[in-house]
Length: 170
Image 1 (cartoon, one colour):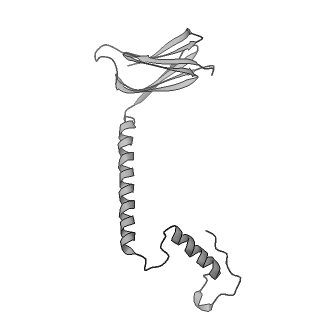
Image 2 (cartoon, rainbow, N blue to C red; image 1 turned 120 degrees about the vertical axis):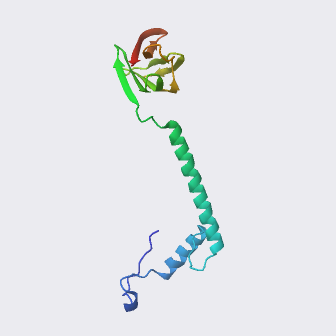
Image 3 (cartoon, rainbow, N blue to C red; image 1 turned 90 degrees about the vertical axis):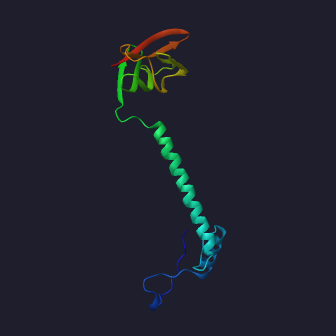
């Protein structure tokens, strides 16, 4: 809030602090009372303590929810990304180890939309009419000991399969 300052000489006892017009001080006090901001040192301390506890509880709950959400969606520390491109599409995947797939990103090289598909082992998903899409998987795919896992993407246009392309996870 901007307080208009008086163009009067300062009192020697006030130091370098400028004085505001009395009408502006009253208007500021009214605004602060409407917003329930204490304007005097003798405000109700019980209400202040209650609101402080409420703010603390709300902040703690928000931080706890954020950290839990962060743990659920956080990328593993040893995640790797692999990408290969075909003639019409590129397929990229973020994975951990040999079986855990975080996401599959499929995008067209020409930037034109089409039906994008992603599949790996028992995971199947599609997104109609897009030129780039990230499919969130976040699970372990395939059976251990069965060799390398192929994470694939596909592009369909006008009801025809244009290209399927795969990334092999070591």
